Length: 194
Image 1 (cartoon, one colour):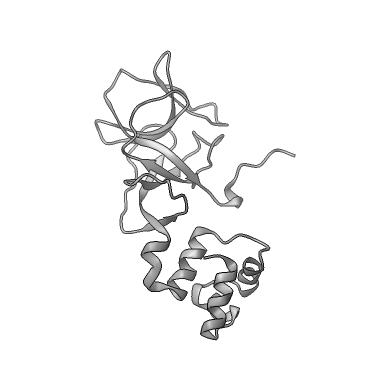
Image 2: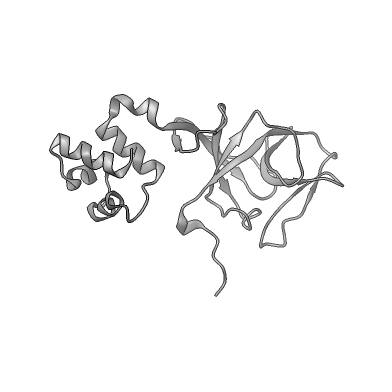
């Protein structure tokens, strides 16, 4: 829904911006700025608005994917897995079997900080240099790294020099999928030093 559609729907229902803000748990002024075009609505905010204004059309409007837990960005280790939670995705090209994982660690902080949500394509497992993947050992431990060839290795992209390349071939691994997209809040974005 575009801001003008939301305003029209509010008018048609006799609702005020305050009513919608209360229904979705958002500050009234913050919502007002979005409806005036002073800022963009996030996918989560649009989903909440649609649940209030168009609940019958929700499945056709915003797609969601499962958030399955976390993936370590560091040494291989067991990842916390959870279920039941879904997150909205705004990209219509998101792969059909995609799922999400939250980054836990700093071995990829030059690309994404800890806490970033990754969208994983489990159907794309071919290793290409410069692409990022979620990898699992035989013991079920996982990590998130960039693949590089010559020699084949998983490369950290970190401000912390203690993270080292992981050479492939010594132990069997399984490619769980390629990282398709990253989602992070503005407050989580890496900042340029002043």
